[in-house]
Amino acid sequence: MTVLAYGLAIVLNLMIILVGVRFLLAPETAAAAYGVPAKADGDAAYLSIKGLRDLTSGVIGLTLLALAGASAEGWFMLAVALTPLGDTAIVLRHGGTKAVAFGIHFATAVTVLISAALLFAV
Image 1 (cartoon, rainbow, N blue to C red):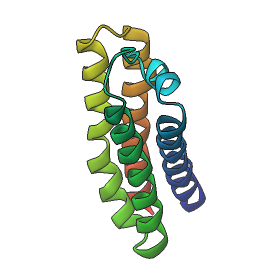
Image 2: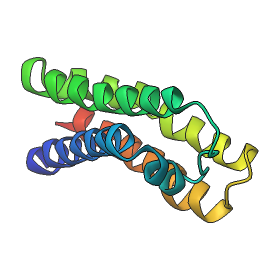
Image 3: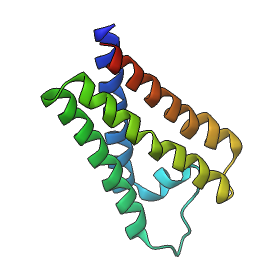
Image 4: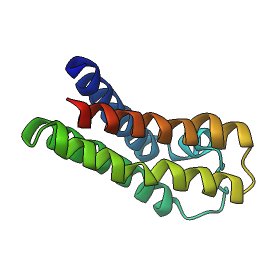
């Protein structure tokens, strides 16, 4: 179970780092994949903020796992599950599809919560 708990946590943190990097390097493409396409005349700074937020979250998660262990990472995952839950609401509120809101963001929140439970169990 330890390998599964640590492995899932590592994969989730690496995935959010990749999402962050994508928002920094290809913001319009990343926004479309997020579920709410960016407006052509919108402020690109907000897409960069999202990228930096996601990148930082993943780095913090990996750092906690490496330096503080499973329990600290479990608490981090529990807290950070608020992000994809909020993303679900944002996509729904701003005209995104239910498929993206629930199939990507809500499913991510559930997976993060499963990760937290596994980390608390080891």
